[in-house]
Image (cartoon, rainbow, N blue to C red):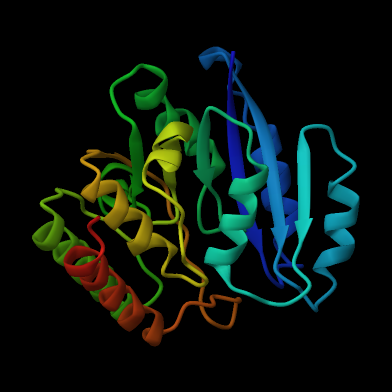
Length: 240
């Protein structure tokens, strides 16, 4: 039996954390002969989220880490990777934009040996499932631009580079070397390093239910600028 480590960075998600955790916990992967490890990382929440985290860490198969200072999503993922023990690693946001019931489709290509890295695409998901692709036009345009830039710089063929749902064989993450990210630049950094090491990114359609800034969406336009800078940095200065 293989183990799927689900890394979930959490920052001020008191409204959604318990529900998304229950959704993750309820996903049955036994048909694929896979068990789950859930790794939660609290990035110094201040809205009462930590009280829920203390409850959840009593559940079996759950590992909880706490940051003393707010460091960013990338730093939380890096902390989670240190505690992940699975054969496969999946990144899950702590809001309700992404549906854990897509897990079987996301990990099946890896289980079957058809892929080493899988991204869940909101673009193909909209076509397949009719779910909305974006909360704001600027986010949609920015995401499409980042995907085009990635394909241009790295010779990839992906539709949704900034997707949250990124899944890796654990040995791939070890092979690409240590991550340096602190914030949302986790996505372009890991994509760049995966591509530079010659791994093909396989995409599958996913469901997507975007939230607005009033509902707690945290990413901002400046994160897109950092993503562009990150893609350029690793393409021209990141090779060993």
